[in-house]
Amino acid sequence: MGLTATGAGTMPAPMSTSRPFDPRAYQRFRLTRLDWDDAARTARLGYELLPSGTADRLAFEEVVSFEEPPGGWEEPADGPGLARALTHLHVAAGTSYYKVAAPPVVEVPTALSAEARQVHHHLYDDGLREFAVTNGLPVPRPVRIDAPGSSGPVAGPGAGPRAGLVVPVGGGKDSMVVVEALRDLRPRLFAVDPHPLVVELAGQAGLELLVAHRRLDPSLAAVNRSGALNGHVPVTAIVSLVALAGAFVFGYDTVVMSVERSASEATRTVDGTPVNHQYSKSLDFERLLASLARTGIHPALTYGSALRPYSELAIARAFAGASRYHRTFCSCNTAFRRDEPTGGRWCGSCPKCRFVALVLAPFAGRDVVAGIIGRDLLDDPGEIAGFAELLSPADKPFECVGERRESAAAITLLAASGDSSAVVRALAGRAAAVAGDDAVADVLTADRSLDFPDAAVAEAVARFIDGSAAGPGGRR
Image (cartoon, rainbow, N blue to C red; front, side, top):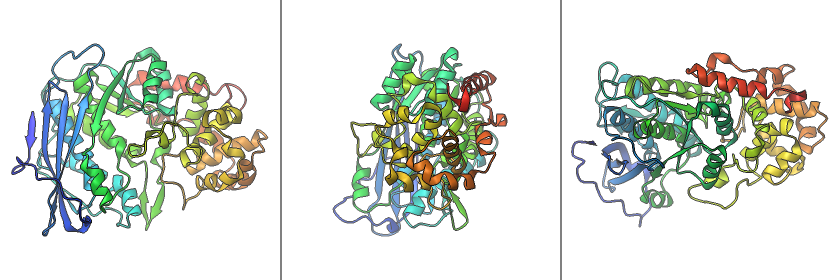
């Protein structure tokens, strides 16, 4: 299989980075070549930035590959469903290269339905709003997706994926709650460029780990150093589409994400426009991608989050009882950075470390949490301002942290238990004002209208999370 844009048979040479890069010189971003090598289970995704004047044309190529599972490949992966999945991955992964100049037009050579264009427009607008804000660009993003049209649903004939569940795992508490809840359904796990701790968690879970790899174009780092725009991209959307392509490579029809309902809250509002660090984890985007998977890739595909009915606080209550993972899991981004890899796990001084400490402490206890992270953040006066940002409508961090209200509910729970740590003493009054009297019960109550579409998955997760509520204050 190979899809090549007209006139894109020869890739232009990478730009010389001996002079400063000027993002304003580029007016169009074009998807070029999409090639699939079935023998190697590898896709090559081509892109180029086109200047309006004398600047160099800038080309990139990303390589996405699927690692052979322990039992070997069962059958060829090439087919129309895989081709459609890779087409949408090609567009979504392009955000990593588009952002170096953020021009107003994205050119896609392959026909897209109106629904598909809408999905990808959201990725290049909503999914890049944090990037825009941090680079002084306007929001909403003034970007247009130019692609040939198609009539009706694109997903047509062709072999569907084999039945089975896969759970993408990233090393944090949420995916391990889903893994434990679904253990009797024997899911396989899935990861893109897994960190060693993800491999360790999969080993602890005793479940098969399927692996894919993204090799970003090596020239991207050099362009960034020479003056390109840079910032956050909707990486969950990219990983999700790698997993949907993997349905045809590894053989499964259901992708079970581990995203809580809290991810839908806007991080900030900028000039009246919501800006959500977690846009590609939001309910709105999940629904868009789930529909695209069925109508634009293959009708047998199911995509969604098994944790969507639950708050981070409820998930933390469940995870408190999964003690065998406490020394292995990590929600701090320090361990996972591509550009600054570290040998450690928890940095103990970032918004994610604070948030995990806050929501886990009411159920596992501060001593247990301090042992996980390496120090007691809640009793450090120097951390009060950082915890206060978790409650702030103006300064909530651009990070994967929960709702302001559930941070407040966690402080309220700790205060009610008699906790006298520096953070709780300082912020209990503010938390009460943010959350209100009924917030704890409300935050811990599931919204079952958001259940995963597969009833067996939804019921297994509900049993596991509801079972964590036993005992005073939810302790197990």
